[in-house]
Length: 146
Image 1 (cartoon, rainbow, N blue to C red):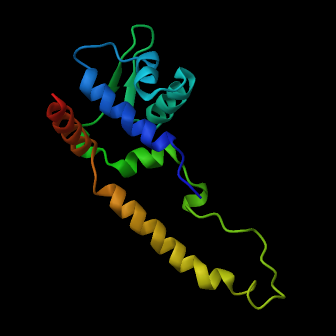
Image 2 (cartoon, one colour; image 1 turned 90 degrees about the vertical axis):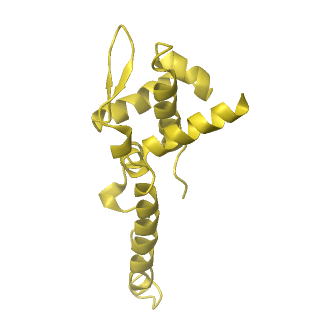
């Protein structure tokens, strides 16, 4: 199991929007250049972020507006927008363990709680980091390169 790159691309998008918003028209083509991917992929991710009400997209003239203060948007919010998990469960369990097998009939009891705890720990960690933190760190890092 691996979280797709769409999550980190979404964080890259937010960072670009904040960094370039005063100097450039931030469009899917512009973002694709920074991320080094196809604009179609960027548009799909932008649609997911829009559907989650994290951003507003101005069609035609271009431009992306973040709908809430960056300090109020966590990595978890972005993760939930980009990586929707089926039934709220990060780990997908195999469908039909054999009830006639002693391991098969007990595997859920052995793993369910542990997997829920692992998912909870990951989600709690994502909730600790905001887009404001990311913006500040990016500005510091870029300034140190000059």
